Amino acid sequence: MSTSLETFIAVGQFVVSPLVTTTDSGRYAASAVIRSGRGRSTHHRVLRFVPRFTSRESAQRYAVEQGVAHASALTQPQET
Image (cartoon, rainbow, N blue to C red; front, side):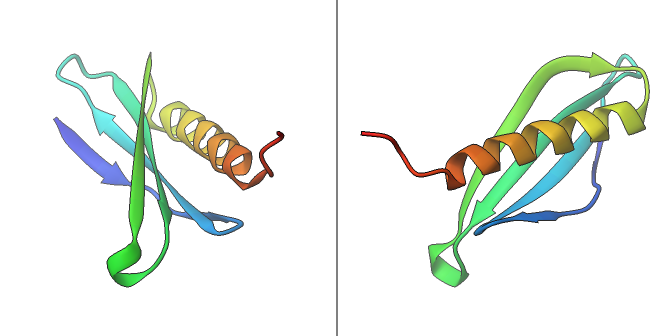
């Protein structure tokens, strides 16, 4: 199994980094890391997604879409 960090995308105060992992079956798993803060105050959220993909590109696209959507939701003000 191998993992590759593809790129990063800034979404407001967050940085989204999609991850693509090759599974033992030869398919691809998508994950995303959402980072906020700096230095000792850095916080990471790791999102792991259930679908498996037949290509690295489709797994990366899914990780980017889901990671950006999650980070965007975090930047929205909370309704009371």
